[in-house]
Length: 165
Ligand SMILES: CC(C)(COP(=O)(O)OP(=O)(O)OC[C@H]1O[C@@H](n2cnc3c(N)ncnc32)[C@H](O)[C@@H]1OP(=O)(O)O)[C@@H](O)C(=O)NCCC(=O)NCCS
Image (cartoon, rainbow, N blue to C red; front, side, top):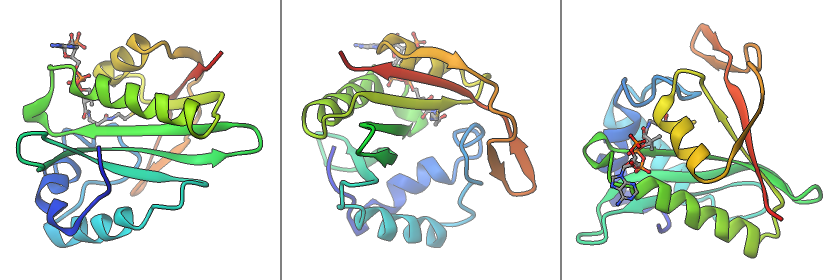
């Protein structure tokens, strides 16, 4: 996991440009690599850890971007934040994102003194629900009605959370 760099455009586009992968995401798929480049530029600047951070998940063999992990909506006073993650389809099923999310959680708890980590997940997003549950997230409630707007559609995800004790 490392900061985004301009060379990550293709790797991130394999995530954000893939309609299947962003089916349960709160943004529409990127239409072309130029649009993804805009995201890479923005994500590379999220080095202010107060409210949000995004890291590239990179293949340790060649440093190519294979995914993204982030936290956002951090509210430092109440020691809470939300996390998000996405991984290129070719890398699914190996436990890589479970490991990355675990590292992110350790960073948030140990470095930022976060107590509550939320994951907002579409009820049909089984791999994401399995991942969160594996790491100790509990279903708190939902559906959060029309919580996400994607284009002209609204989606109603579920609320999961992890409490660090
Ligand atoms: C969510 C997402 C990252 C999960 O991907 P994933 O490959 O299932 O997750 P991991 O990389 O942690 O791999 C875990 C899987 O690998 C398997 N696995 C294989 N070898 C493993 C190993 N050595 N260690 C751990 N798990 C291993 C696990 O059993 C698990 O499979 P299962 O869930 O079918 O039991 C992926 O589906 C994705 O990018 N989705 C699109 C974006 C998205 O929806 N993000 C979430 C928004 S809320």
